[in-house]
Every structure is written in C-alpha cells, then in structure tokens.
Amino acid sequence: GENVEQHPSTLSVQEGDSAVIKCTYSDSASNYFPWYKQELGKRPQLIIDIRSNVGEKKDQRIAVTLNKTAKHFSLHITETQPEDSAVYFCAASIVAAGNKLTFGGGTRVLVKP
Amino acid sequence: GAGVSQSPSNKVTEKGKDVELRCDPISGHTALYWYRQSLGQGLEFLIYFQGNSAPDKSGLPSDRFSAERTGGSVSTLTIQRTQQEDSAVYLCASSLSRTGTSGPRSSYEQYFGPGTRLTVT
Image 1: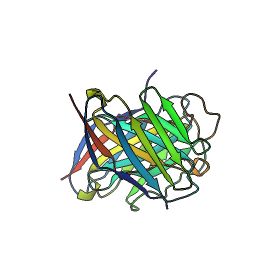
Image 2: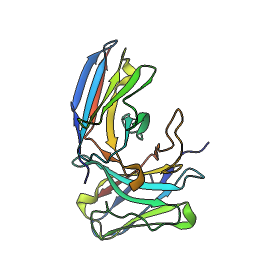
Image 3: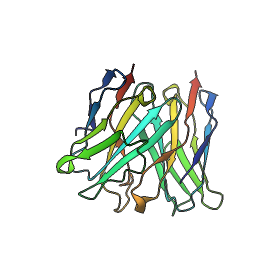
Image 4: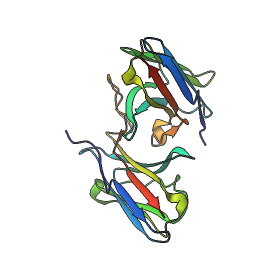
C-alpha cells in the first residue's frame, strides 16, 4: 500500500520567515495530495490541495509543489505569522480508488514572534 | 452551513466493553470516511462509505471494529471488546464526491468532524 513520509517532524521559524515541509510517497498511482492544518485540540482543516495534473498551486501565502517523477511534494508558507503555528499533515490518495487518504507523520510548526 | 458532527466528544470505557461512536456528515455528501489519530500511529484510514455501495473496510485493524451507514447519512463506528490500544481520537470526514470537476477548492476535499476521544482504562 501507499506510504507517505514527512519531514521535518518539527520546525521552528522566526515570524516573517518562510517554512517548507516536504513529503514523499511510494505509490506512483496516487494522484491527489492535500495538506491539512491541525491546531491543538481542533479538527484537521484543508489548507491547500493539488492534483497530479499540475506541478504547482498557490493560494496567498501558501504554495504546494509536486514532482511526480521523484514522487515528492512540498508545502511552502511565506511571511509566516504566529497563527501559522500548528501541526501540518500531508496526505496522498488515489481518487478512483475511493480517495482514502494516507497521511504523513505530521510537522509541528512553531512561529516565534 | 453545519459541518460534520460527532458524538460523544469524549468517551471513557473499561477494557472489554463495547462502544459506539456516531458521525453526522455534511448534508448531501455521499462519501464518508473514518480515521483514527493516535500518538504512535498518526492519522490512519479505517473505513470508507460511498453512496449505497458496499463499504471499503480495508483499514480496519481487527474484526472487533465495524461500521455502518444508515440511509446514506449517519454512520456509527462500533468497537467490540475494547482494548487499551484502541485509545485514540476517532475522526469522521465527509466529502461531496470522489469524482467531479475541480474548482478553486477540489471537490475531493474531505471535511473532518471534531472527533471522539476514546480512552480505554
């Protein structure tokens, strides 16, 4: 089955700096890659997603890049703010197989003011 | 509109007892998923329902786990003879469809409920 590895497990950045989280996946058939943000005690919430037919997607300060050949994708957060502090999860799925998400282990991001 | 809801929010049970966890998906969402979030295993898929099709049970960790979805809406996850390793947060998610056109936000987005924290003592 699919295996998703996520790095780093923790990331501390100064407010205003950029944060990058990287994930690799094992199943070349995966074609949907969402990123979820989970604040302490809250539910995971989708922040951005990308399908395999595009290489990059951007939404304000957040961007995701996908390299299908290398089977890795990354989340980029620019101009970080204290409210960006949370745990971020990447995931991968095969849409036609039910879109069952396989998650990475998570990255705890701390933005220091 | 109303999001995904789950009940109870917390459940403490003794080892060996059965528990039932409930999920109310977003109205009109045909796909429903159960995931488990634990410190040791992270977020893992358990079971998936799509419309009236037979559920995909490929993620259930043992035959003590079962789930049903009545009328294509509410779902119940049942854990029989609970064990301490079952302690986790059980998350339900629903999605509009597993197919469809994409817009600014993909139609594949899964909306999560607040979860049920299960503690087996």
